[in-house]
Length: 79
Image (cartoon, rainbow, N blue to C red; front, side, top):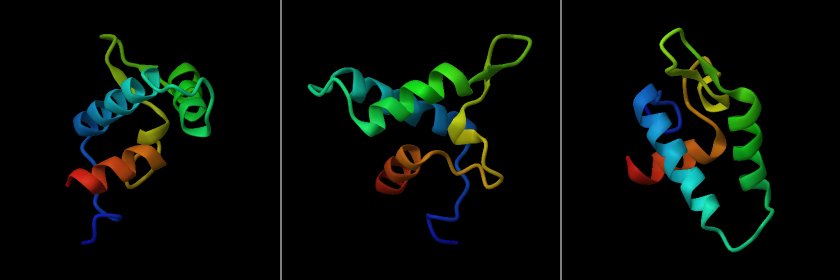
């Protein structure tokens, strides 16, 4: 199975999401598409279970559990 078809474990996807969001926070550019995508996903896409754990963000909506474009790219680079 190629890396573009490998599902990403939820815990890893959430860790990569946090890494990406931190990179955007320290970006010198105030606005770019990737930064806005993260903001919109985190603002409107996240859902929580009864215990307050994140169960869903935009990147975890896909049937293959691949992640958003940014998570996929970082996952493919690292793994």
